Amino acid sequence: MYVPEHFKENDIEEIKAIVEQFPLATCVASIGDDFEANHFPMIWRDDRLIGHIAFANRMHENLKDGCKALFIFKAENSYISPNWYPTKPQHHKHVPTWNYQVVHMHGELYFKHSQKEKIAAVGLLTQLHEKRVNGYGAWKMRDTP
Image (cartoon, rainbow, N blue to C red):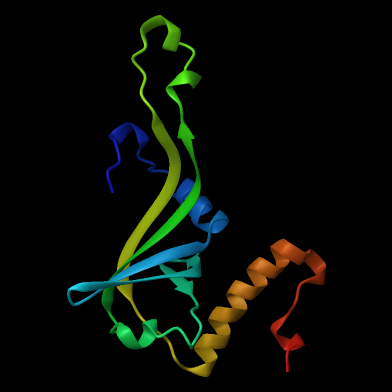
């Protein structure tokens, strides 16, 4: 991704905040001469990302454990018109651009298939997002049969 130096974000807390606020990541991984891309929610814990995809999603069969993957977290974005610059009438030197925040993280992808690990990942995701959406009335995994 092209990032001009004056736009590069080095503050790890700001980067974590983007991942936390916009947790639906696009995961891109290579399969031979092709790519696999999927979207799934992620949580950044310590030095790793934890996420969950449905078992019906065949990504876990198409990709090998340890394959290289890119995770893209996209925040808000917007077109910027040259007409919005206050100095436009003076010199007309502005051009259109796009304002956005995005985090790219890359590493190795591993799938955990044990019941305990799957429940732990879904539990983390559920607790975080249910609390945000429903507060004290949050749905809990134990509410399901």
